[in-house]
Image (tube, rainbow, N blue to C red; front, side, top):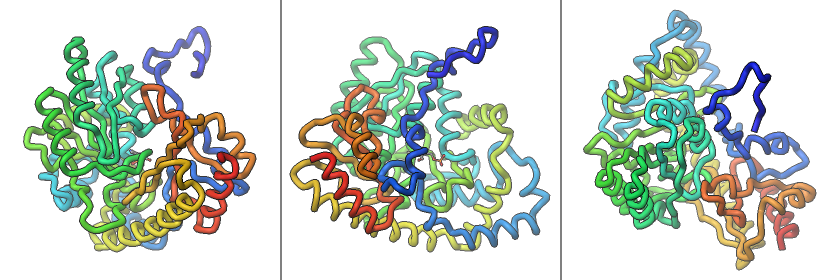
Length: 401
Ligand SMILES: Cc1ncc(COP(=O)(O)O)c(C=O)c1O
């Protein structure tokens, strides 16, 4: 934890409660070409539609500079909000433009929603494991994080009911459940339809909201998977749904969005005004122009097929080298698989040896708010080409077994 800058500038309690991301701390390693990296969570640059973006960027500047180079509405460019409402409806969410707000990546949505909903000591329920950018935002509001169990079908309803019931009996206020039902970061899991219904029913009965984070839902590798958001069940307005263009277009666009109740969005908009006035209007103009041109759907298809092939390679290599010695998720979408060593050894302690052998992964413990997960690791199939992935898995197996 960083220390106060000077005695005359003591940091706030919130600042002292922020926790640096254990994963970003590994980032220096990830750019070392000598290390085969299954760490990191960034999309592969080969999936970026650079030429398409360049032409929309030129158009947005040349034809629309009055809006694309100027400050704009805090809630987002109107045309993009309309287009995003259309995307939300395509996902089965009943959304009009007043239900949609644009944010500077979905990470900002996590931060802003935390700001408007959390007081110090409020409880946020999180999946075990969960995304560290989510927990980072909640810790920054001094929330208390409580874990709920997951299995291969997603959140275990009995665990959610038991944990939220116990907290209520202790008089502690659960504000919301944070969940990533589609191809979760870090586990790669997809929550089943039945579990989504049960999770929604428990939240409704016990009186807490659901913060549903869905940056990976479009990256489904098979037809007919149950990716329809929990938000589609939301007859009571208790689900705050987050989307993002980072994984299907490019993260530098910093273009995320919220679909939620307009009253909540009003509070979020005021918080956003204080944070950054508005998200980048040029980014928004580029994204709006690209969607209007009809180029989003083919782009998503290309990205899916790119990662599907990479996933196949990693699964095959793990089967060859790790069979019987570890278990891992057979991810049906997204960027990650999550691996558990059968012998229970600590992957954090093993990492320096792996790096010496030229291969990196993310140890799983930081993804667990209850201190467990030492025998787990997150592996991404996004970064390395097939031959390096095969080589990397073989090297890892030599280090581990
Ligand atoms: C689950 C999850 N939520 C949110 C984000 C942040 O994405 P964005 O680029 O939209 O801010 C990420 C990024 O990796 C993520 O994995």
